[in-house]
Each structure stands twice: as C-alpha cells, then as structure tokens.
Image (tube, rainbow, N blue to C red; front, side, top):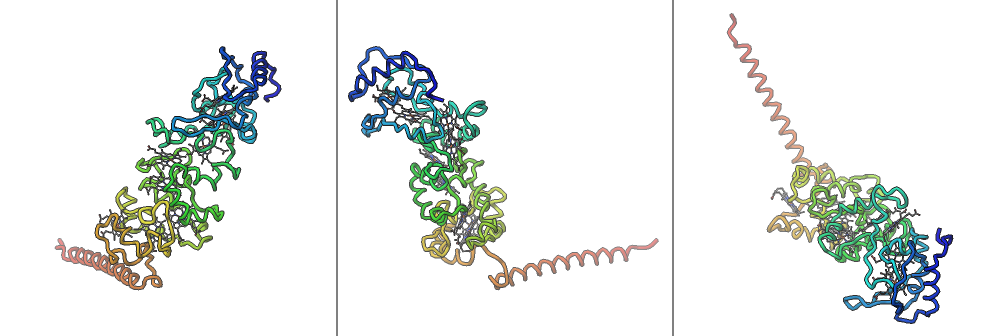
Length: 365
Ligand code: HEC
Ligand code: HEC
Ligand code: HEC
Ligand code: HEC
Ligand code: HEC
Ligand code: HEC
Ligand code: HEC
Ligand code: HEC
Ligand code: HEC
C-alpha cells in the first residue's frame, strides 16, 4: 500500500535535503524552520536518520537508549505496511520535538473499531485489569500493550519468537514479576512447560490474559474463592492427569474436607489448594522442597494453625476412605455410618411404635 502514494513536493525536498546534508551526528539538522510532514509521512523520511545504528540518546537515569530502528522488524510484524506516523502520531514536522509521547496502541485497537485491527475486545479487557488501574494511579512500571507485545516487532502468538507465544509468556510477565517467575520456573508446572508439555498452566491460564485482576478482587480467578475452580480445571480432569500419572481424587477429597466445605460457603480464611501447595512453586509431595513434603507440613499448616507440630500434620490430608488405602479410617468411618443408620432406625421405630400404642389405646366410643 505504501509505494503508490505520490511524492509530496515538501517531502521530496526534505528527503533530498536530509540525504545531502549527510546527516552528520548529532543528527538533528540545524534547519531553523521545521518542515511540516504530510500525513501519513513516508517512512523513508524517518529512516534517513533512524536507520543509523549509532543514533542514541541518554535517558534521564543515565542509560543509553538506542534510537536505531530496524525496518525489517516492522516488515516482519503484524503491522507491516504501517507508516511510522500511524503510531508516532505526534511527529508532525522535521526536525521533530525532542520528547515524543508513548505510543497509544488503543488508537486503533478499540472496541467497535470498524476497519482494521482484529480482536478489539482485548483492549476492553485490558481496561478492567489491575495493570491499567495501576497505570492510572501513576505507577509507570505497570505494563501497557507494548510492554507485553513489543514495539516494532509485534508478532502473532503462534510465532515462537513472539513474547506472547505460550512458551515465552512466563518470561514476559517475569521481566517485572521476577521472584514469582523464578519460583514458577522450578515448579512442576514450569519444568514441564520447558519440556514442551501443552497441559501445564502458564501465568495467563491462572490469571487471565488482558483482564488480570488483583488477588483481593472477588472476581479474580486466583481470589481464595476462585482458586479451587482454577486448579481443578485440570486437576479434576481425568483425561489430562492420567497422562502424567497424577491422581484426581484430591479435588473431591478437598471438597469434602473441613477446609473445602468452609471454602464452598465463602470462607476466605480456610486453606485452598494454593495455601498448602503454594501458587507458583507447586511440587510433588515426594520432593523435599515441596511445601507439602512431610517435613515441611508443620510450617505449611503452621501459617494458619499456630503451634502446628508434626503430629498435627500427620496422616494424609487428602483422605480417600477406602479399605485398601486406609483400613483403620475405613472401619471407623463405616462404623460411624452404620451406627448413625441404626440409631436413626431405632429412633424412627420407637416413634412409630409409640404412635401405634397411642392409636390402640385411644378410648373407643
Ligand atoms: C533529522 C533526523 C531525524 C529524522 C528525519 C527523524 N528523527 Fe526521530 N529522532 C531524531 C533524534 C536526534 C532523536 C533523539 C531526540 C533527542 O533526544 O533529542 C529522535 C528521537 C525519536 C523518537 C524517540 C523519542 C524518545 O527519545 O523516546 C521517536 C519515536 C522518533 N524519533 C520518531 C521519528 C519518526 C516517526 C520520524 C519520521 C516521521 C522521525 N523520528 C524522523 C532524529 C530524527
Ligand atoms: C505499530 C506501531 C509502531 C510503528 C508503525 C512504529 N513504531 Fe516506533 N515505536 C513504537 C512503540 C510502541 C515504541 C516504544 C516506545 C513507546 O512505547 O512509545 C516505539 C519506539 C520508537 C523509537 C524509540 C526507540 C525505542 O526503541 O524505544 C523510535 C526512534 C521509533 N519508534 C521510530 C520509529 C520509526 C522510524 C518507525 C517507522 C519505520 C516506527 N517507529 C514505526 C510503535 C511503533
Ligand atoms: C494505526 C493503527 C494501529 C496501531 C496504532 C496499532 N495497531 Fe495493531 N494492528 C492494526 C491492524 C490494522 C492490525 C491487523 C493487521 C492484519 O490483520 O493484517 C493489527 C494487528 C495487531 C496484532 C495482531 C492481531 C492479529 O490480527 O493477529 C497485534 C497483537 C497488535 N496489532 C498489537 C498492537 C500493539 C501492541 C500496538 C501498539 C504498539 C498496536 N497494535 C498499534 C492497527 C494498529
Ligand atoms: C500483561 C501482558 C499484556 C498486555 C499488557 C497486553 N497484552 Fe495483548 N496479549 C497478551 C497475551 C499473553 C496474549 C495471548 C496470546 C495467546 O493467544 O495465547 C495477547 C493477545 C493479544 C491479541 C491477539 C493476538 C492474536 O493474534 O491472537 C491482541 C490483538 C492483543 N493482545 C492486543 C493488545 C492490546 C491492544 C493491548 C493494550 C490495550 C494489549 N494487548 C495488552 C499479553 C498482553
Ligand atoms: C497454577 C496457577 C498459577 C500460575 C501458573 C501462576 N499463578 Fe500467579 N497466582 C496464583 C494464585 C492462586 C495466586 C494467589 C495466591 C497467592 O498470593 O499466593 C497468585 C498470585 C500472583 C500475584 C500476586 C501475589 C504476589 O505474590 O505478589 C502475582 C503478581 C502473580 N501471581 C503473577 C504470576 C506470574 C507472573 C506468573 C507466571 C510466571 C504466575 N503468576 C503464574 C496462581 C497462579
Ligand atoms: C512492565 C511490567 C509488568 C509486566 C510485563 C507484567 N506486570 Fe503484572 N504488575 C506490574 C505492576 C507494576 C503491578 C502492580 C500494580 C499495583 O500497583 O497494584 C502488577 C500487578 C499484577 C498482579 C496483581 C498483584 C496483586 O497485588 O494482586 C497480577 C496478578 C499480575 N500483575 C500478573 C501479571 C501477569 C500474569 C503478567 C503477564 C501476562 C504480568 N503481570 C505482566 C507490572 C508488570
Ligand atoms: C492447565 C492445567 C493445570 C492447572 C490450572 C493446574 N495444574 Fe497442577 N499440574 C498440571 C499437570 C499437567 C501436572 C503434571 C505435570 C508433570 O507431572 O509433569 C500438574 C502437577 C501438579 C502437582 C504435582 C503432582 C505430582 O504428583 O507430580 C501439584 C502439587 C499441582 N499440579 C498443584 C496445582 C495447584 C495447587 C494448582 C492451582 C493453584 C494447579 N496445580 C493448577 C496441570 C495443571
Ligand atoms: C490443607 C492442605 C492442602 C490443601 C487445602 C490441598 N492439598 Fe493437595 N496435598 C496436600 C498434602 C499434604 C499432599 C501430600 C500428602 C497427601 O496426599 O495427603 C497433597 C497431595 C496432592 C496431590 C498429589 C500429588 C502429590 O504430590 O502427592 C495433588 C495433585 C493435590 N494435592 C492437589 C490439590 C488440589 C487440586 C487441591 C485443591 C482442590 C489441594 N490439593 C488442596 C495438602 C493440601
Ligand atoms: C490458609 C490457612 C490454613 C492453612 C494453610 C491450613 N489450615 Fe486448617 N484450617 C484453617 C481454618 C481457618 C480452619 C477453621 C477452624 C480454625 O480456625 O481452627 C481450619 C480447620 C482445620 C481443621 C478442622 C478443624 C479443627 O481445628 O480441627 C483441620 C483438621 C485442619 N484445619 C488441618 C489442617 C492441616 C493438617 C493443615 C496443613 C496440611 C492445614 N489445616 C492448613 C486454615 C488453614
């Protein structure tokens, strides 16, 4: 779409002037009167300076920011054919102002956009996120579109080099959430991801993609009310877990436990899956570093049960009451079951007999 645009006179002259001047560094030409750009301007005007490899500036905190732009990046991206000024829309003359605003991707990617960008709903979801809220509160470290997607080399998620490719997402989030990323990498989930497993969760499977919410937001999938559902998408699914030899009854045994029942009725203080297994460092219980390894249970339970000693944590947590797995519990539990049934029968029988006696002994007229 680019090359067919007729050359504007001003643009032609400007380009010629730029090229003739040899663009000695520092590149800013001393032209007293800035030349207005046609809109959209030809990329060649910008590249006359920005193709230079050594074009750079020093940031306020003393770092060197390269201002070199590789045209190949843009050409390989989802935005190939776009003009520089489509995104840098505040550059309207050359030489341009020293400070240029951050690119607003939502200029094109917004809901109800009729032409152009696909997936407009992503912007709407981002608007609900903890990141957007943080940005609006003035936290400049919270991510906007380009922090996750990249600037000039925006690639679709199917491209293995994309920062939003499945295998890259943890590292993309991890640039800012460092400690969590390092836990995740060593967890059973993170290790399996590196080995190419398509079934383990990455950050966005548990947190959502654009509508990532704060943990204390009741609508968050990782809020204490949501965690059980989030983990059990997979951990209650026989089809997924069988592939890895991981049992699924933990979900059901949890639901029947004291913690599980209270959680279902809305308690946020009882233990959910992540309170015992951690959210980001899940490991099999046989791993000595696991929060549910037998040696670590007093500390894990002790977070909430003050003074929990090894005895407190003894016995299986996810109790499967079967004769083979735990005969003692099985017999006690069935003993109680039968005791309850027999007691109920005796009670009902007693009442029935009592009614019968009253009926019989009613005086007849
Ligand atoms: C004559 C050379 C020249 C031309 C032509 C030019 N620039 Fe620049 N550009 C510079 C210089 C020099 C800087 C560094 C600004 C500074 O720090 O003083 C810069 C900085 C920038 C920045 C980064 C601002 C920052 O520091 O974060 C952007 C974005 C930019 N230019 C976009 C463009 C676009 C888009 C065009 C084409 C419409 C363009 N430039 C044309 C010389 C040029
Ligand atoms: C799809 C939108 C888009 C297009 C098209 C685009 N840019 Fe950028 N550009 C960005 C984003 C995003 C950044 C990162 C800084 C920011 O967030 O504003 C950036 C940063 C820059 C910088 C600052 C150096 C850096 O890497 O941070 C320069 C210089 C620049 N662009 C020049 C250009 C030139 C020249 C073109 C045309 C060849 C162009 N841009 C086309 C989105 C775009
Ligand atoms: C000038 C309008 C415009 C701006 C600004 C813009 N985009 Fe786009 N973007 C588009 C269009 C149009 C497409 C569709 C390209 C296609 O399908 O060929 C697109 C495609 C995309 C895609 C790929 C979606 C797909 O179709 O697979 C992503 C991701 C994306 N843009 C992210 C960004 C990010 C991040 C920024 C900011 C750095 C940005 N866009 C800025 C117009 C824009
Ligand atoms: C916190 C990181 C993050 C932020 C911020 C973010 N995105 Fe995304 N984006 C992702 C991830 C991850 C995907 C999903 C990749 C996948 O489908 O697996 C994605 C997917 C997309 C897609 C679909 C691409 C495709 O081809 O399927 C578009 C379009 C998009 N984002 C646009 C935006 C826009 C516009 C913004 C800013 C309003 C934005 N994103 C902000 C991480 C982010
Ligand atoms: C298996 C599901 C799961 C995965 C995968 C996951 N998280 Fe979490 N995340 C949670 C749960 C549950 C919580 C809330 C419980 C807690 O605070 O420990 C949480 C809390 C958080 C928090 C806020 C609490 C804090 O400690 O600051 C951040 C930030 C976070 N996760 C980022 C990430 C990032 C980044 C990744 C990827 C590297 C990731 N998460 C992967 C489930 C997950
Ligand atoms: C550019 C840095 C950056 C990137 C990239 C980033 N985040 Fe964040 N994130 C932040 C900041 C800063 C906050 C703190 C917001 C605040 O002030 O509450 C935050 C907050 C969060 C929270 C809420 C924590 C809480 O206290 O409840 C979660 C969850 C989260 N991010 C997950 C993610 C995930 C998942 C990704 C990747 C898809 C990601 N983040 C990518 C910077 C980033
Ligand atoms: C997207 C699916 C998915 C989600 C969501 C998920 N997991 Fe997993 N999890 C797996 C898979 C698959 C494995 C087996 C990985 C392997 O063994 O290589 C696994 C393994 C585990 C293991 C180790 C089991 C063993 O014996 O090896 C624990 C513990 C675990 N997950 C806890 C959790 C917790 C806690 C949550 C929620 C915070 C959660 N998982 C969410 C898919 C998931
Ligand atoms: C009160 C703490 C606690 C809670 C809550 C909890 N677990 Fe466990 N979980 C354990 C302990 C301890 C073990 C290892 C010993 C055992 O099996 O009893 C374990 C074992 C497992 C295993 C077997 C793999 C292994 O490493 O032995 C899986 C899978 C699992 N839990 C998933 C879950 C899921 C999913 C939830 C939420 C629905 C959950 N757990 C809730 C403490 C807990
Ligand atoms: C996130 C906090 C938390 C964690 C971690 C936790 N619990 Fe609990 N648990 C509670 C709360 C709250 C109750 C409700 C009764 C109470 O306050 O003592 C409870 C109740 C119980 C009960 C039934 C009531 C009782 O006091 O007899 C048992 C048994 C129990 N927990 C065992 C454990 C074991 C064993 C572990 C470690 C594997 C553990 N819990 C880890 C919060 C937790």
